Image 1 (cartoon, rainbow, N blue to C red):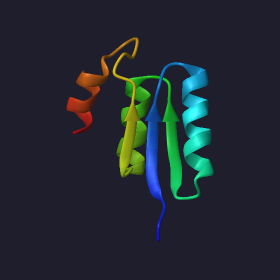
Image 2: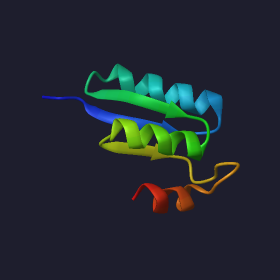
Image 3: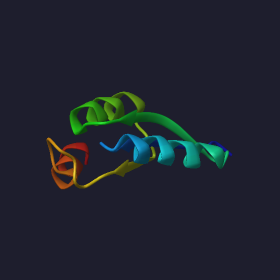
Image 4: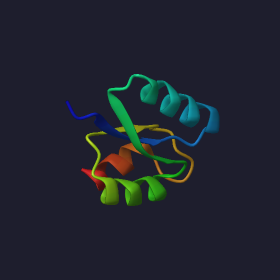
Length: 72
């Protein structure tokens, strides 16, 4: 079975790195991109086309809700 491809968009470094580490350790999930800001995350999503996006809804320069509308 192919792993689930995930992109993480989170402005807090510890949360971003921690989530990526925990998800990767399952062996069933491949973190194909991480981003600190929404704009960077959207670019990664466009290139990687992940199965799942883990998104903080309280990003500093753009709300996660607005970001969902863009990546939808």
